[in-house]
Each structure stands twice: as C-alpha cells, then as structure tokens.
Image (tube, rainbow, N blue to C red):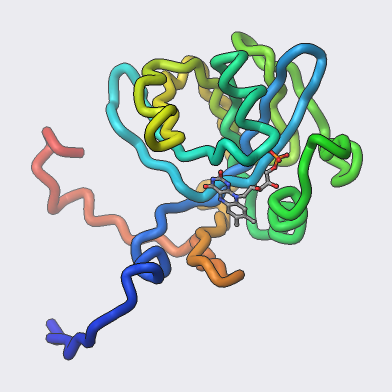
Length: 185
Ligand SMILES: Cc1cc2nc3c(=O)[nH]c(=O)nc-3n(C[C@H](O)[C@H](O)[C@H](O)COP(=O)(O)O)c2cc1C
C-alpha cells in the first residue's frame, strides 16, 4: 500500500473528501403544497428501525413542509438526471411547481403524504423519528417506513456531490464479501 504525503487543508473544504452520497431528491407535502429539494448531507444511522439522518436548512422552503408534516420521501436519482438535480437545488418551491418545471412524475406513496418521484430508481418513505436536533443543527432523524427500489439496473450510476459544483459518479463495484466476518455484513 502506498503512503501519502499530506499537507494542511482548509477546514471549510473537507466536504470535498467526506461528503456522503448519493445525492438525493427530498419530496415533501403539507397543506396541499408539494415540493422537492436536492440534498447531499445525509447518513444511515441504524439498521432496525431503519434510521436515516439528514440536514435540511431552515432557509429552504421544504423545511416548513417537512417539519410540519413530519414526513418526506428520499428519492435517489441517477447520472442521467444530473441537470435536473442541480436545477431543483437552484430554485425554490415557494415560487414554482418543481414537478411541473422539471417534468417529473408524482407517484402516490403507500404510507406518507409526500409523493415518490417515478424517474428516480429508489424512493424511501420516511416518518420523523427524532426531532430533538432540528432546533440546533437542522438535523432530522427519520424512520424509513417503506422502501421502493427498482430491481434493475443492479448497480445504478448515482452521483455524489463533492462541493464546488463537482460530482463523483458511482457505478463501479468491488465485492469483498468473502473477507467479512458474517456478523458485520
Ligand atoms: C448538489 C446540491 C446539494 C445540496 N444539499 C443540500 C443539503 O444537504 N441540505 C440542504 O438544506 N440544502 C441542500 N441543497 C440546497 C437546496 O437543494 C436548495 O436550497 C433548494 O433550492 C431548496 O429548495 P426549496 O426552497 O424549494 O426547499 C443542495 C443543493 C445542491 C444543488
């Protein structure tokens, strides 16, 4: 294995190396209003219940819809949707209908009010599990109550945001299953 020479790095740019992925589209609904926002700051937190955490700025129009309803759908787009992903993150649902503007299709969810996005290969229905960190960090902790995933493609080309307008493209996989202790798989 190679050893690296490392140099001091600006703290405000560490996201370029630590930012999780994939980028997702968060759909929300409250009081007859439906919206979508782009989101990159998220993490898995527990297997059962399936807990998922994410940071949603209170400056976003989605924040109120999501906080009031206590629900959302996390939709995972693929590389072919990259322009739409950026477009959705560049405008606010307070002024426009983003489903209409970006030609996306709403599909009713099974449990929550927010719709699934048909053009995304995976959609996860979420109910608020722990709102205690919202006031301090805008951190929502969700219980994923229903998962919808397309069986193909097996390895979708997801996009992972690095900051500065740059994305990493996933799709290549490495299977080291045989080297894992079974209990940590
Ligand atoms: C690539 C990308 C990643 C983003 N990640 C986040 C995020 O993790 N959290 C967040 O609050 N906003 C994030 N945003 C910004 C929101 O998507 C953006 O403010 C959007 O306009 C909010 O829409 P709304 O006002 O209709 O809710 C991101 C935007 C882009 C383009």
